Amino acid sequence: MTLKKFIAPQLITLLLLSAIWLAGADSIIISGSNDRDNLHKYMQVQRRVIDNYFGETNLENLHKKSIVGMVSAMEDSTLTLEGTPIDTTFADLDISNLRDSYNRFEEAYLYISNNYPDKDMDELTESAIREMLGTLDPHSVYIEPDDSDRIQESFDGKFQGIGIQFNIIQDTITVISPISGGPSDQLGIMSGDRIIGIGDSSAVGFTNEDVMRSLRGEKGTEVDVEILRPNRNKPINYTIVRDDIPITTIDTSYMLDETTGYIKINRFAATTHDEFLSAVNKLENEGMEKMVLDLRNNPGGYLSQAIAISEEFFPRGTRLVSTESRHSRFNSKVDSRRDGTLKDMPVITLVNQGSASASEIVSGAIQDHDRGLIVGRRTFGKGLVQQQYELIDDSNIRVTISRYLTPSGRLIQKPFDNGSEDYAYEIYHRTTDASVDANQFKEDVPDSLRYTTRSGRTVLGGGGIVPDYVVQEDTTVSGEVFNFMLANRVEFDFVRDYLDEKGTEFRDRWEDDFEDFRYNFEWSSEDKAKLLSMMKENGMVFENSLDEPKIEEDTLYISEEKYEELLWINLGRMKAELARQVWGSEKFYPITNDLFNETLTQAMKLWDEVDKITSGYASSNPR
Image (tube, rainbow, N blue to C red):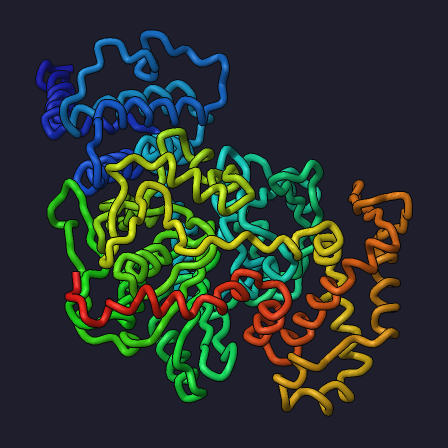
């Protein structure tokens, strides 16, 4: 072989390797087909956080947490850490810019990829991102590609399933809120319930994708879930029949009396303002001169929709909300651009611990301007605004870009320093006495978080909105007998059978006059006897030695006397379910409000107080 023939191929190889090195293509050693995308995705997340997060960020801490997330997801106790790129002691770590962070993460990524080829690097990267975002606030989160479309559906589209908004907290599926009118809502599943079993399997440790795959499904199919409810020692088992999930955001609108309209909004989605105006127009044609706006258990949604609805209650030029961030482009002051259609209408707004975010923007503006009364219980306390950013693989991150302030300048965001679990369950750690909770909160709030309304009333920041009038939560429909009936779908099955047997007769008598049904329909002795039979068939046992009912495993033990005492509650819920199955979900609420809504009952006695608070409003200048 000639020297030329020997050197030529070696020279070509050397030149090729040199070109690769000069081009920075050292990632040629990466093993998996998604590795380049994973590294790009990591860089995208850090850049979005650094460029957009509303507060100060520490790049070195973000990086450290990402490595912790990746290592913990490996679930391998035999890992060699010391002296490797995944060493969590981070000796001599020096990260001063995004490039340093990326290079360090790439070293750790390649170390795992090359030494542990059985590991799913996509999952490890997602775990790194989740842990990194966890250093920010509870609302800055990672959203898997499939979840992005599903989340959007809850605001824009139509889907089928069990109808809950949920989050995974400490490996447990936690119900944020049941979607109003959906299957879970109809069964009595509540905010704060923890789903610990689906079908025959434990649901602890499920990912978002696992939850969607298990709980979504075609209309009419069933899924068994096991739920652990706060303040209950034993789980509750439900069989949920999947159905179309309502996409409207106005649960109901109707006249409470000859002059008072009632509108209940379950969330703020793309169509909420249009739905609201349609409801207002209908009620004004029916004689509405004052309004009860029900925002209880409304978790929020689109900021723009909250602003649009707030605008309807104020004259042009009224401050509605402002936002603050360390990035000036996210700072804003939003004033009403026109005279609202309801600017002179007396209003009472109902809120509770499930009212959050956009709900608090609307109620905060009404309270700060002395525009009406806020009635109910202290709200959730979410004053942060998020923006969603798409990543290279169609996943997304939601990053908090600013905090919002009510017109008086108060931030109603509650603390989140103790982690996401304490933050999410804070509302269940509040005392059950709503007045005591409000008074304790008032006593603990520092002077720096005390503000004044237009007329000089004191309002508070730092932990939700404290109502002007606090009303205790109505616990009538949270007892053992009621929950047993819902968990076993007794009221649903009873009404279905009732309509099968007596539907024609019932419709001939009542269908053309809902108001007549609302005030005059009563269940017969025969109906009550059948209900008792169905309750027993589902596991209710009379035990006359008991003072209070109790549930053991799947059996409800109760005395006959106590059953008769509480019977009206179940009969009332059955009447509401009958209204839902005959007239639709909108007619469910007038019945339940008539029977079980103590907050609304108390609010209707406060119109004179509304007049007092708003007496100087029309003559004062907008803030």
